Image 1 (cartoon, rainbow, N blue to C red):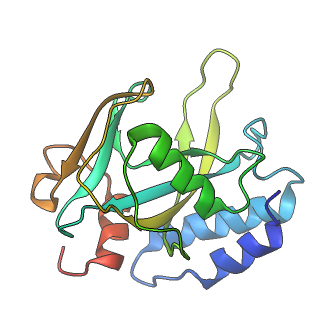
Image 2 (image 1 turned 45 degrees about the horizontal axis):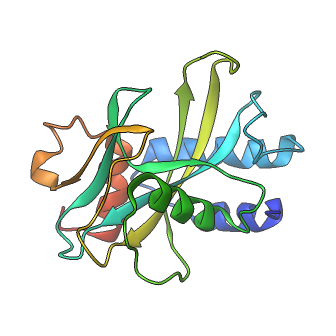
Length: 183
């Protein structure tokens, strides 16, 4: 089980004074961690729950792995819910990347937190509208290999020059800039 105090320490260490959206999301994540007994439970809808996402850089360092999410009908980073067997949120993000794409990632280490984004998830069947308090971690792929899972319509390596074509959100662009300032 993930220790909320370790996540508080991780989130407190994240700061980018040039990114007001991430700073606001950071405050919302800290409020969630302080104010709910089950911040990692996918059944915690008010005020939402922590999710883990991976920004995966290609072996050439020039492209980011994106998934066309089936339900949300958008190109996004890979990620999802924290599961009870996940020891840390970065491990949850790594697991989600591999489950969704089969990507081969560099050996596990201390994946850095490179972004925080709190965003809305629309209601569906048994889930009401709620917020994902998303922690974005950096990973590097060791091959270009990937596969498309049931959750996705498509997966692609996307260069920053194609971000507009794929309507890549600002939070992804800013997170990539933190690990690759030339983009």
